[in-house]
Length: 299
Image (cartoon, rainbow, N blue to C red; front, side, top):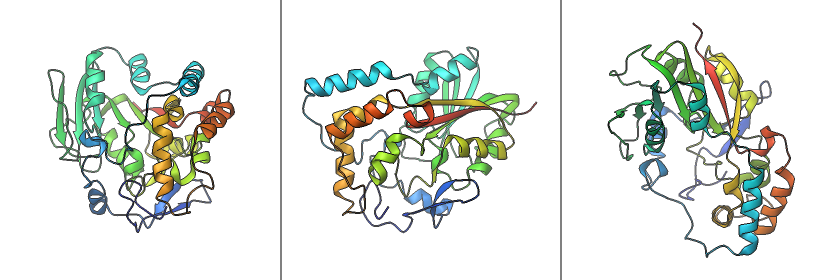
């Protein structure tokens, strides 16, 4: 990836390597934790409640665009993380959201009756605090001292682990917050997805240098296992939005800044139709653009 996927300026961390032993993908040279902090100093990043890097609004979708979106919705069987958590935990459970960003997940889960605590290192983020939520500055690498060890029923990492320099250490550290038998919910972009393969460097989750790690179901399972957790099973999500005119325009914008380094073909409505035909009945690990695991801290 020759440029920063948001600023389109050259980046020294654009080479993606794969481990021949386990298949794990990662950028090299790997940045230090201090270096990664500067990657988010771009103003309007989504964790700060902004829409930095988004293309201008597209015209009102026509009939074929609406039909494509409807058909994608009809075949979508995603397991949204909030639903996975709601099915797994009783109402009133205490959850800490590491990398809580703009606080949207805190609000959604608090509305379902969970006691929410957020941890966010980006001091510019618009973090939510309310009757059932509190937010502390920190990260998985440097947990806030205010958080009680072994004091939570669950920990969640939603679209966070791909940003961390040492994901295994981050999970081990976060596991200290769990009671024995506590549950960890981890969701990341799916590097095995047909969407990632078709889009190549134009894939939105190819967000170098903020995305340091690129997971598949297998490497995410291995990461959680190395951290001492017992993996119960995967879940998959994110599908419909990739068939919208807005997302097509986003990939087109990235493609136009790659200077020939990206995929051979620019995204278009016809490519979105082909992707829909290819993925409608595909296996879940190929169909969906994000993968997650539910893992338990041994008791």
